[in-house]
Length: 504
Ligand code: MLC
Ligand code: AMP
Image (cartoon, rainbow, N blue to C red; front, side, top):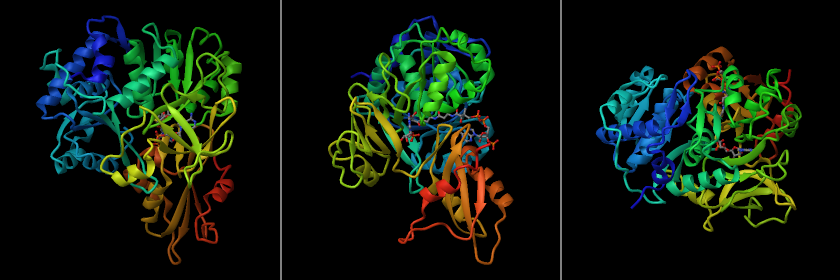
């Protein structure tokens, strides 16, 4: 038996001495050295009693060893569970215990806070810091650079990625070898990745965009990546001349456009710019083309499905659309209530089916049944239309979700936090247009009849408990929330009321 992801993404790097990771300090990691490091880490996982199918929860900065840890999980047959570096211990506690992790890998500075959480599920705990050092790195260094990959099947789990739930509880999307590999193949082919490419990688590697879209495609194609720890405008402007391709969320492109040094000459040699994770405004697409002569290629995906659609590599990349279904992927637009397919051009709920679609939510069979239909189609929660030429456009969301700089924020989670604060009778959280993040969080609070609201105290507690990107950036205190006759909060109306709060 083989190990599909190892065979396609990792085995080909054996003995390849060209650069795989180009790091900001000027150092480079070859393909073969990366594979050797991943193999050493696979031994370290085994030594830490991580068995086949066990979850490895990873809360570390983006480094070459952090990516090697992902590769090690594939090789050792473990399930990689990456966690947003912005999460607080209070947030991490849920993911680690819900996934019943066998190993937690964290920054040394978090060891004290996370050890008791790891103990609740009898997980081992190892460290990896922002320079790639720590107890995991030390343990790995003791082991040989060869490891016999653990056999795995197409339907075996490779990763567990949590996506927040509209009801507040995060859901772990179970992704198989086939889900990840089929998508990497479809994307590498559609976007013409070859070993000659150099991808400028400034995305985080704890979400599907930076990890699966960017890294899996690169591992499959065998190209190099300029591997930046995070989005850094100066470094990007300096390193673009060495790259052939770049992937980003829309904020990357709006920030670059604001910089006069981002010129047509600087990127004349580039082959491809890809955008996704949030809507790219048509005006950004057009401004980018006006400045650089490049048409950004916009694609659409989500954690549960990997990538679903892409504008064409050759052919018309249409602003405001997310292009066509990828090879092997089917999409349909349906009535949100009856699931009956709607005629071409009508707006409805987008459903997706294909080898890219996850196999269910971890320990949540009912949620899985609600969203993954018997005929194999997954209900994305996105409202879309498909035009007569087959281009898909995402026109809105059926789910109550804010996307800020490419990070998802579920209002329900913030509302639950706010409702629990003293002096707050109730709250409603919405997204409002934001010039940098696309959308940002507005919290509308109703005080208790007798009480008063201490915003400073709420913000201080939010800082301790909620990841920074989730924190409201605008607060309003009102006597009552707008409701319809059924008593439902009118969020559409609120979005109009607060539409301008972040506009300069
Ligand atoms: C950081 N901050 C944010 C934020 N990112 N606030 C709102 N929205 C965001 N996205 C806040 C921090 O909490 C901090 O606040 C302050 O900004 C500075 O932090 P920073 O880390 O220096 O921020 P910055 O470098 O400016 O980060 C912005 C960003 C980053 C856009 C570069 O958020 C980013 O890399 N986003 C990419 C997200 C992504 O990869 N999404 C893919 C999901 S997968 P304070 O108050 O502490 O100062 C998916 C599927 C698909 O959706 O289709 O791809
Ligand atoms: P996540 O749950 O983090 O995987 O986020 C997935 C969501 O991001 C999708 O359901 C969409 O709402 C949104 N999304 C991703 N790509 C695009 C895009 N190109 N245009 C509009 N929305 C997008």
